Amino acid sequence: MPSAIDSLPIILTGDRTTGPLHLGHYVGSLRSRVILQTTHKQYVLLADVQALTDNADDPGKVRRNVLEVALDYLAVGIDPNVTTICVQSALPALAELTLLYLNFVSVARLERNPTIKDEIQMRGRDIPAGFLCYPAAQAADITAFCATLVPVGEDQIPIIEQTNELVRKLNRQAGRELLPEAKAFLSKAGRLPGVDGKSKMSKSQGNAIQLSARNAEIEDAVQRMYTDPNHLRASDPGRIEGNVVFTYLDAFDPDVDAVAELKAHYRRGGLGDMALKRRLTGILQATVTPIRERRAELARDRDFVMDVLRSGTIKAREVTERTKEAVTDGLGLFKL
Ligand code: TRP
Image (tube, rainbow, N blue to C red; front, side):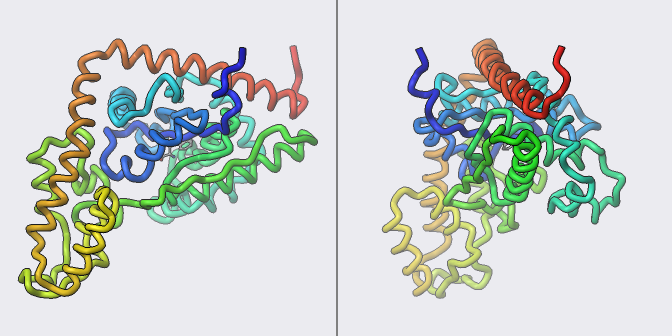
């Protein structure tokens, strides 16, 4: 009997397995996945093959982080009973679809993708071919699950557009609607800046708060947080714009009215950075502590995590193989 979940709209999302996830991921995507899994059929892909496109010199890192990212997923509340968590390198249909799709996209089009374009500008065309082709590979990921919704950061929007271009080409070639187009789903909170106020939180920049951060690390990170450099005394009026402490309060403080009052007070003057930072420290510690503890508990039960990945990948294999068959049929390739 088909269960109710089979008729829900389909989501595919994922992360490159290059390192454990941080609060930026939590605000940008993890938090919404926990909510979306109740109203959608959600697949989450541990994108280790894609991670290799810019980490070919360190496959060990890519391998080790499959489990690390899986731990992050489970620790934040992605529930393997409703969300299918799967491993990209164990899904051969994704690679096969990628190879087919590469015939429906020109090299010039691949080079126009903003991420690829930036990389070519920095490093010249001496980039791995796998990196050049990753937008087509991601189109294969999305379409293989017949996803119509893809929760991603803003930087991934061009990839969704490119996916839909490919879908239209393939549908035209097949003469029918072989694959559905997908929509990007952007988190309302947007992108969380690093604690230094730089645009993006990133482990390699040293401005991130990990999901496994201890209370003392959180306190230290908040102490270092960029505020308003002209707000020297508590009595001075301060600026909210670009003030990282307020950006984080907006993202994490459940008491929206209290934050609005704090902003007004800060603008008027009379509210010190220390008081604000104390409030934020408490809120972040309350957010991270249960995640860190659950993560540590799960890390001791490797067998359970491996079982989750195995059964998720088996389910994903069925779905992606079916799509691959539909695409090869739709294109009218030779059948043995
Ligand atoms: N490109 C995504 C990232 O950088 C990871 C990813 C791979 C992905 N395949 C996907 C995201 C499919 C959404 C859908 O994190």
